[in-house]
Length: 347
Image 1 (cartoon, one colour):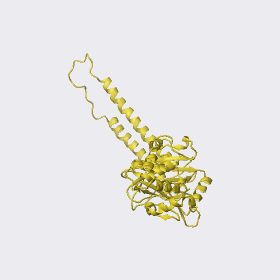
Image 2 (cartoon, rainbow, N blue to C red):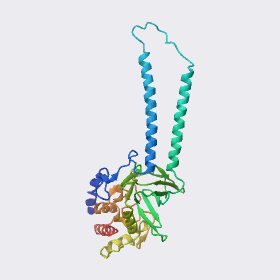
Image 3 (tube, rainbow, N blue to C red):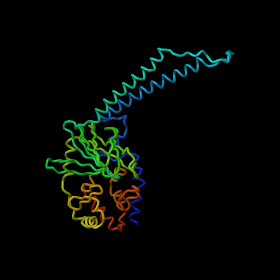
Image 4 (cartoon, rainbow, N blue to C red):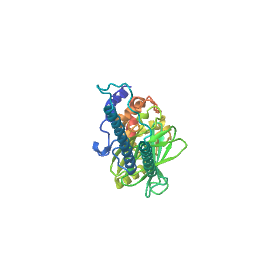
């Protein structure tokens, strides 16, 4: 427990990091694109912003018009000091121009908003993948994300990663959305709108990242405990860099003989029942760890991935992410060090 306590000493700093400069590819905070619909970097996100500005502009215009007329009426027809009559002002009914105006104008506004909204939805919710699109399967688990890249090298294989989606810039990405357990909603505001992930049902979304960077998002459907920790990260890089990343993810696991003890402990304890490490274990209930250290974060993006965080996470996951399904295995200090050292070699 002493080792675990020392490892947890880093957690306040780790947690503070999640609210400040987030880790990225180059270490430059400016490379991180915060989740905002006002800063689009993809055609669907841009269409959503344009529609939002249109609706906001019309609503603001109506607000100013109505409030202005009320203010004018209150001031012009207020009771004055020299007004001795107690009767109501003369009432006017049945003004045809007014009746026609407040019937036609709302109809025109609804008509314009309906047409614009339908056009936007049809542009965003495509029924077929765009030409030359990269296909990615996103599977929502409670409480982590799984991404699958079918047939990365043309041999029918599959690359499986967790929590961080990598894509090339300036190429459409067609995302097939599935859920393994509860309802989630995949939402990266700078790239595209919200789309639900439903058990036993498949949805799709698409985007085209126009700039390099790390695009942040959040599950937008309450999915239970740790919903707030169900974070999203999309890493957009140049095509050649993305291809290199994909080849590295498809490569076999490198077995480091200096961490054999840690690998044996990983296989002996329940780790191997849930986690996949190619050639070592084939668990299907938790993130694939084959190339764990190629990622920047842990626990679905809630903290940067480094030795201290990893050690604290293994010692007791409930401290960093209370309520998650991963238990504390009550490893002694030597076992904890050995397993951590082993996982640090999975690049």
